[in-house]
Image 1 (spheres, rainbow, N blue to C red):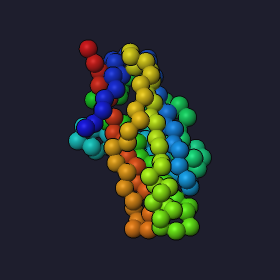
Image 2: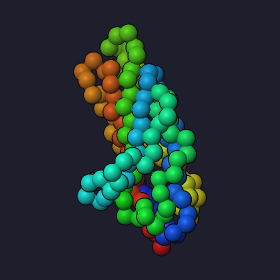
Image 3: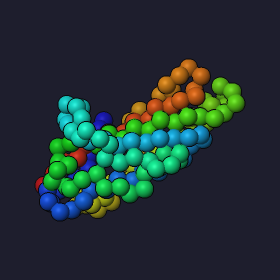
Image 4: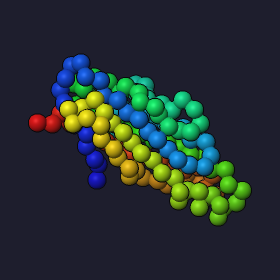
Length: 139
């Protein structure tokens, strides 16, 4: 079930995202804004990781009023480095992700569960992790 974050309707408050990943190997994370039908709302990512940890350190995704009704889609690709299949499966099971959103009327909210984690290859060298958060105006 998709989780929600109340962004409000301010034309000045900035909504920010942070992603903290703990994993073995190299990670790339990209956040994009989607329309409710899952088509891209923005042509370019609104936040990206800047190193191989995959973490995003507090980046602005937009003004609150421009985020209302959109879905924040956060996707991470993990390249596991274990020497054999059993080691990579164990590494995959230990990946943790914390998602933080802030700037809305309720302050900072923390999301610790990703929606999807699947191996992209049968040998577990690549993992796909995804989280969608519905951005709502609220009361």
